[in-house]
Image 1 (cartoon, rainbow, N blue to C red):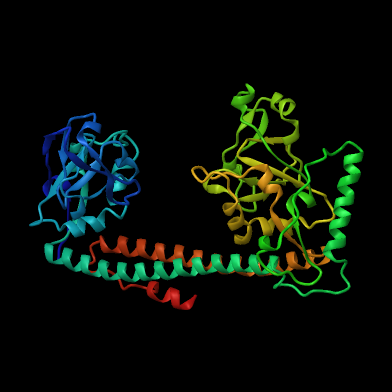
Image 2 (cartoon, rainbow, N blue to C red):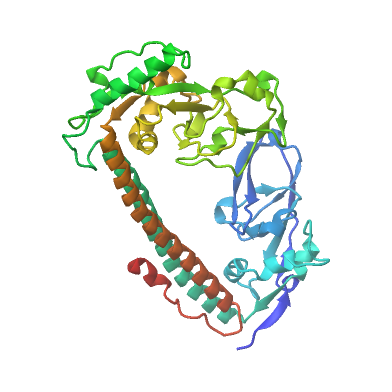
Length: 457
């Protein structure tokens, strides 16, 4: 069985099928995803909303290539559901001659780097934008039709097993995430640790915290706050172990505040200045500085109350990221914007990580969304945050809870790492299989160990 290299122009041809858009008609528009992830529906709009009135019409099975995004894998096949969809002239449509080339064969081939490497190769062919002539000049390996069918069938079979494995790994990942939340929930309910009757009870601990706050107020180091309402029976979500106590967040922390928008204060963003933390930088448990922002230093003079100290809690209070909470653990001077809440506790009387675990638990996050004041754009007020109900254990038990959660989280981290390794290994195996499929071997190699990975985990 012989293979040959052919130019795509020998087996596909460009099709230009233009229409003039009617303002009163509704049209499906499609687009190509980058990284060879296929063609999808972009939107459905009335013709009056389409600026360029001359558009191309797609057919089921068209090979669609994006003029600009081809260099980042912007090409794929149009599916049945997109028959009749339109695209602009910045896309190129090609018909496949199925007497020479199976569409399914080409569909599998474009998942390899055979075409991509020809688009992004160094030198004069490193295209900023692709042209139809470039596509037609790309070379592909081409066996006879019967071999193409055999390769496609074998790859489809392997892909089915790869899909089932991916589904199983996703299930395992979801289960581990649920288990992680379950651990937190049991931790803050007192079900994860043993109670010790010799511990100082939480009611006494809370009195010590309040006494420390009063001392700071008298010394002028802390502003007196509005008295919080007593906790009613209807508010209590679950029963606490003996020695624990329900309290409001405002009772046990020194400061709850938020930042401000530089725009409101006449402060400009700069390339190097005061580190400025936004909700984008606050992940669950950690500060994410992949995208650093800086403002002029005078922001600290305008908003001194929200200058961060090491050990402060930062909580997102606006939009879909409500509840993500981390501890500011940097030595760098910084401030925050209006979408981030700063919570500062007394240093020694509350275990920092216990409270962090509670903030990131589903119990607390569900409570936050229940108390949001604006459903159109979810947000939390400082008043609502200060009223949060906190299950407060004795200090010694807080330490035991944190130690136990650490221990269990480490085991979960190991399991998640194994799942991720299996996922990467399966992807590597699939790429090896694809590479072998389009070499002149006449058959695809066996499915290797891909199908057994999930069973071994």
